[in-house]
Amino acid sequence: MIATTLRLCPAHYSMANRLAAIRLARKTNLGDYTDDDIDDVIWNLNSTPRKCLRYRTPIEAFALNLGVALEM
Image (cartoon, rainbow, N blue to C red):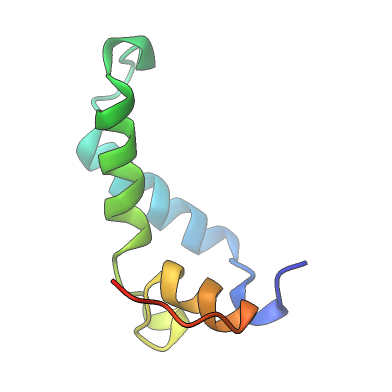
């Protein structure tokens, strides 16, 4: 279970959706994208620092929560 400090409120979900919408055209079939394209969008979202995470990326915050050293 993820700690409450990583819980996102609805505003954060809408921000993530807006960031994803920048990369993916609206009403586009996801089948038109390759797995690599989708992976790139996911990586960009998860490697963007967030103010609510004390300017850490979601990846860094998750690793910190698990107590895992992260090397990028």
